[in-house]
Length: 250
Image 1 (cartoon, rainbow, N blue to C red):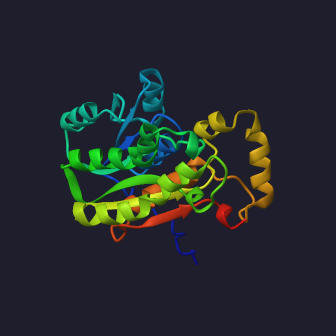
Image 2: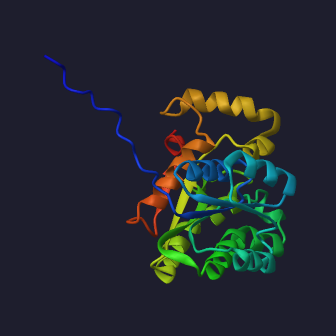
């Protein structure tokens, strides 16, 4: 008597096959890992960054279909980038730009305005120029759970991040049926974190391993996994998704 044939592993279809994902700020860190994961899910990936050399290396790593080296905060360059894209796009993730830190009383008015508005102005620039996004696609922004804790020298960054959730909710109504969502991250072990912390990086990693409920440091791949899920789940819009390993609770 012969045994019944053993079933082989179930093959899962790539979730982003036939779609185009654009990552503004995709040459390193969270942006690069998101591009890598999206490519692994079958997407055509377009990445941008300021540094042409680093961008070229990143494109080779992830198999990007297209790259563009420019400053995303320059409105004319951003508009030209979207005009030059050859095909409809499905998802745009914006990781470009970093937080502003410093004493509130020592900042002049121009720096305060920039710190409070840079991320929203960039997001609006992308929204206005991404008219070829397919219905059901998502504009995905980055924020921080750090907005919920105030510390010396962090007030302007916390205020700027805290303004993003209602901004995203409002923009999701205006941009529908394209979806708009926000990822609020805690500490993520990226080159940007390394540049901000300098020689205190190792100490910070060790502290987080001891104190976080997950027992490890959050990495770019963790955020990338969430980003791709938000891209593929078409019921998600106007919302903020925390990913910090429980950092805000400890």
